[in-house]
Length: 290
Image (tube, rainbow, N blue to C red; front, side, top):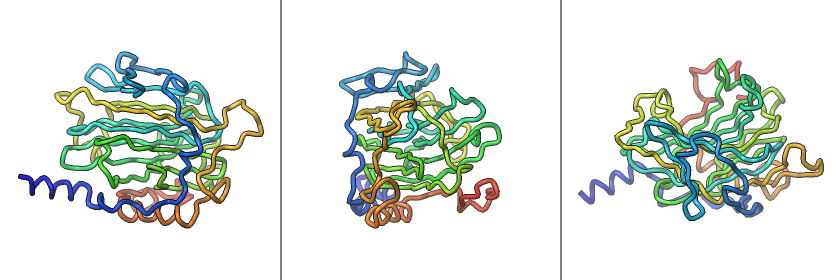
């Protein structure tokens, strides 16, 4: 039995012993952590949200999920949370941390997503990153998804997940390791309007796990997401014109160092499981940045 469990862990986390090479730069160190109440309010499902010893707990059961939202909108910044996911059967369930202006601009909104796609016990979580702009996430959806497995078990401990968004690029980080960089190649393919920071847990059975093959099973409820150590290092909408967002790189306001690129390339080589630009079934006239 022990041998079987060891082989299962190797299958689920095949590179877990190695880890990525050091990025050499740690953008999270530039921004102080805050408590949930300092930066956020409950948005929906208040009965499915609690604070326990400084950790936000949100959960989904058959009656409801829950979501939260930052007090302020931002024009750019570094946005991070430490997240711990639920083990076991979580298919159909999504926990998320993201930027959006969908309430202010319904039908024409911008969004930058980190989504944890629930799974079955024999398979690892999928971390999905996505970018929408000017309504590409409304109606006829044009996603810009890049998906990853992780080089650790995200159910065993808290790990830091972050979005850096400034006028020239979006960078997604896991424990300060850049996993994806989305540069601004044109105004038409980049979100530029102010956004709020959100988080949520919800039922996305129609698509979340292997394209909807596995659905949420409420015999395993509640499904719990835990968040702490929030970081909101940004330029607020309506704030000082002199504000400059934190840098994701030692090189200055944009780009990555060669050491950071090496870390990102390692992650993408070993853990990237989907890239919309490499999907031959997609109409790439709709995603000209590819």
